[in-house]
Image 1 (cartoon, rainbow, N blue to C red):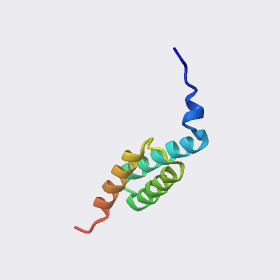
Image 2 (image 1 turned 60 degrees about the vertical axis):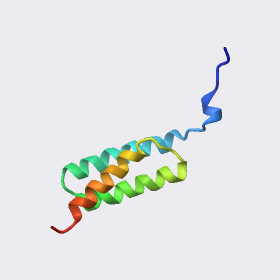
Image 3 (image 1 turned 90 degrees about the vertical axis):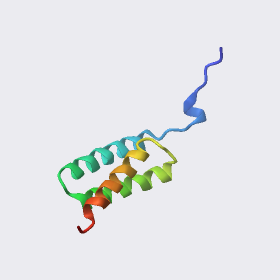
Image 4 (image 1 turned 135 degrees about the horizontal axis):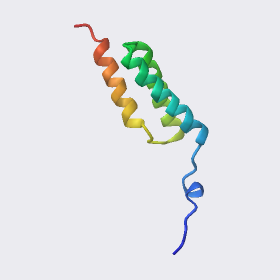
Length: 76
């Protein structure tokens, strides 16, 4: 059985992954504290990082938080 070195096939930038985890946690916290505009800004920054590193890790969750923040920012 052949063992594949996945880091060669799929290069992973660990630093970017850590930054995205921090941004994701910050976005969740700001949303829970009702700082929707700040949370939205960080979620969009995280999405831009995902686009630049071509990763899907937590990508959908940041889109979900973006939508949640936009709903709360709409005037009622």
